[in-house]
Amino acid sequence: MDENLTRQLSIQAVDPGIDALSTFEHGLVEGMNRAGKLFETEEHFIPELLLCPDGMYAGLEILRPHLKREEKEVRRKVVIGVVEGDTHDIGKKLVKIMLEASGFEIVDVGRDIPPQRFVDEAIKVQASVIALSTLMTTTMDGMADVIQLLQKANLRDRFKVIGGGGPIAQSFADRIGADGYASGAPAAVKLVKNLVGEAAR
Amino acid sequence: MSRDRLTPIERFAAYSRGEALDRLPCVPIVGNTAARVLGVKVSEFRGNGRLIADAQIAAYRRFGYDVIRIFTDLYTQAEAMGARVHYPEDETAYLAEPAISAAEQIASLRPADPCKDGNLPHHLEAMERAFQAVGKEVPVTGALTGPFTTATFLIGMENLVRLTLKNPAAVHQLCEGAYQGALLYAGAILDTGCTPSLTDAMCSTTVISPKQFKEFGQPYLKRLVEFIHRRGRSVTLHICGKTAPIWDAMAGTGADCLSIDNAADLQAAKSKVGQRVRLMGNVPPSEVMLQGTVAGVRESVRRCVRKAHDNPKGFIVASGCSLPVETPFSNIDAMLDAVREIGWPVDGDALERELPS
Image (cartoon, each protein chain N blue to C red):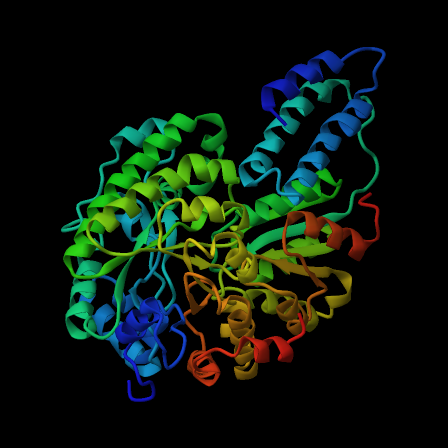
């Protein structure tokens, strides 16, 4: 989704005869979804996917004054972050982009995040899912710490916990008692949808 | 090594001549795990070439593998050009802050001087000491980070991947600077007696497209390989993650051996480029070597050997990437033992029968 082109098209789409919400959903969101599919089939790569939100937000800026109805539905929330000791956040960013495009509300707590922060934030925003990311073997045990904190607080059943990143595999997710593992951003969207039921809203 | 008939150098020489071996070459890629062999903290390697060499030599003697690679992290060259690296007390270092934050600053970067900038002199000292000590029996290599990957550390990963689409000329300017630094360092590595071992992690198709690799990665790698070849050495090229769409281009750099990550398939690599390059790989470093059992390591080694032992240009059993620091010694031993058990000649039919495909 090219930033300038998306802006131009959004300007053209501002028309009394066209519902802005429809432009948003069938234009911008659909564009993001298609970018996600192209990423999945390896026609798009990280650079293309990282630039997509630039296009979406440029379009949204044009459409926003015309979006008469604010979205009233409560969207499902996902708290996402990179575990403590790790600052690699490209993977987390890609998952965030794809989940956002799928309609989830993302609370990005950032990188190098202590386990308790994930728990506190998930309680505060009433999240459905806690998504944990790391690229390093030295920090992956931080994912297990989050789950243990939830268990200690008798909160384990309130949140689905998922993990991903270079050193993570399904076997690790199983071992620490996570609800799921995804090998990449498109797989993470499917996983989250499966865990919370199809609808993001 | 008394447990093997041949020294690593004898083994590689016999392998290249097509003669009988005692076993396939085997390289668990030991980096900072070497600190555990000496019982020192990883951070003690910083600025201490003698300690890096001692640890790497001790690890080689402890496990009896076939290549020593002087390596602590991928950031050494970027650090020497101004990037800030964080050194945890007892874990592998990581990038704290890139050298620059915008394309306009690229012109301010200077290629590092291997004799005085950052930790380069200490790594060179480690290479020289290791080569002097055991270079007659085992190949000693020095890690050389590829220009594109160093470029991501110089300006930041996200900045760089954005620039690949928005300002390709700036990316080339940055890669050229990183290349000039890598060239000087490669020359200095060769002067120690060691051979540069190329890693270009960010060129993976997990990150950039094959087209971008051909534009921003391959040309600079090719020039480095040509330089090393002119000095009479063969070169191994490692790219992390998925690489299947760029195997042709990787072989096109002129590299003699491709190190294949566990995210890619050895059998497919063999079909695609096995006539042109030796292959090494690809026991999973995290899932199998760090977290797996001795039995799991053995099974993984046998799977790799089954897929690639008959690679036309030869095959080295290796981990798919550098091993995590805390990899259990028992799993590294298991990797070597599994290769010894398979022995020579490799009975491909037997391996075929025992494993479901």
